Amino acid sequence: MATETPYQKVNVVDASGNVITSFGGGSGGGGDASATNQQSQIALETAIRDRLPNALVGGRLPVDGSGVTQPISASNLPLPSGAATDVVLQQVRDAIKAQIDIASTIWTDNSGAFYVRRDLINEGTGTITVNFTDPSGSAATPGSGLRPLATTDKDIITDFYDVLTSGTGYSIGDLLARVAILDANSGSPSATFIWLNLSAGTILSSAPSSANIERANENVGARQVGAWNVTVLNSSIEIANDIGNPIPVGGNVASGATDSGNPLKVGGVYRATAPTLTDGQRGDLQLSSRSHVIVDTIDYVSTPIDISVLDAGSTSNTGQDSQILIRGNPTANSFASFFVSGNSSFALVIENQPVGTPFVGSLQIERSVNGTVWTAVGAFVAGSNYNRSIITAEAVLHGNGSSCQYMRLRTIAWTSGTARVTLVAGQGTGTITVGNGLRLFDQVSNSFASIKLGSTLALFSDTAIVVTERPSTIAGTFGSVTLTSANTEYSFALSSVKKYSFKILSGGSIRFSNIAGKVAAPTLPYYPLDFNNEEFQDFNTSNFTGTLYFASSVAGTIVIIQYWV
Image 1 (tube, rainbow, N blue to C red):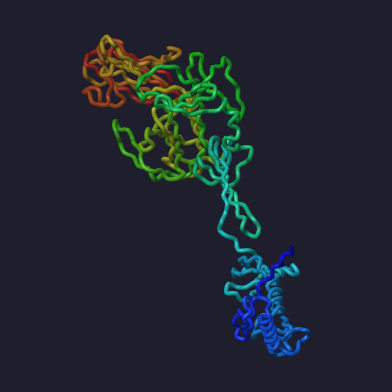
Image 2: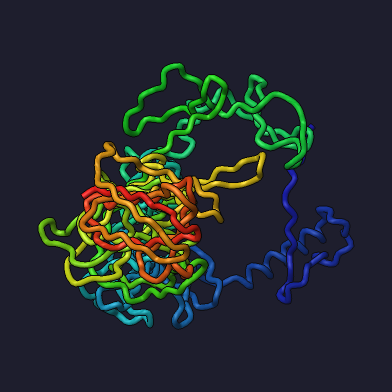
């Protein structure tokens, strides 16, 4: 059986565009092939034919009634005025490709003016063109020194270093910081380095030597055993290494309180033979065999100080027992002051400066407890028997510096020249001296006795023990005075004697003086001498010429005199 091929439905319309649903009008109806229907079909097709153009154009039906615009093409299609054509679009595309702005940056030159630099690329040719404009967009020509405008952004890098050897601006143990300031935005990237002493709070004038410093914590592994751990134990802090040995850094009890436990070892070491170190070497804390810390004192040697003017700034007043107290601010270059606290003795060297040009003036040696109130003090002239507080020439002296903090020399007279003063303070640079009379105490009688110079009279009031230097030979000249009447003055003349002595041969106590009219009726100054004592005077290299006056309350007292010329 044959299969009917389906076709797309086609509607037939009349001249008004209405769909024709029926053709003819005969009785055939129903779409059958009756004569009536066939006539209707013929009539329809004839009507369609009559409506078509009579002639074809190029074998095609005209559609616009012109008879010439057939067929329709893009080239003949009319466009509105100003409409874009394909040529115009291609021109626009080429112009865009030739003007792509790939970068815009801000630049400046030595005049300080600002410019906008635009980098343009032609995508067609690959050519890059650089143009400059001012900030308003107008074309501009930069001057010399053209460069990118740097931003204020900078990178800062800080490294820390421990000081191993002292140098300019830093000492052993200080912590230094190297601050690097990097500027990568300028025409040529740059770096600025600054060295800081964090321990002292100062900026170093120059970079330290690499041999003097070490990066902080750089060799931590060489300074510890294992890894350190910080923990809290019983409300105190302790540091322990990874093998479990704790090292406490804080006590477990308050100050003044007691506790028990093992002592903290602080690194001391006992050596039967003390080590010998060289400059720059580290050493141990040395202990004695009984675990006492060994302390070795070192003499202090001052920097030489020149004195070349008269002091006009100091003032003085009289204190207890006629002591002269000195205060005020001495004139610059009129004194040399030294801090000697903790040292028991001192030595002074006074030299002309320059050598051969004498210092003409007087320097007084002074000491102070507080650096404000000063008093004169004596010092021994080395190699002689002299003790002086006023120096008028070159000298080397030593004295007692205990119980004071400061020593100084100050001009009390000056005519010309310069004196250069150097001081050494230590534990034993000079002879031990006794500042006051040495007193003996008798616990049975509860009385005192003083040891005084042999030339000092023994007074009943101080029960003095007079230490008298006896001559190496008793040879000399003898004389005597008989005090015939009581309370009457008698005399004995001496001429150019080096020393003399006298005592009572018989009778009672006497009164003596070297001034007439003082002993008959006792009038100061005079000195008493009892029967058991002896008066002795030694003038060393000097001579004495004068008269001695005697009196006694006991008539007939005899005084025997011995003298050396």
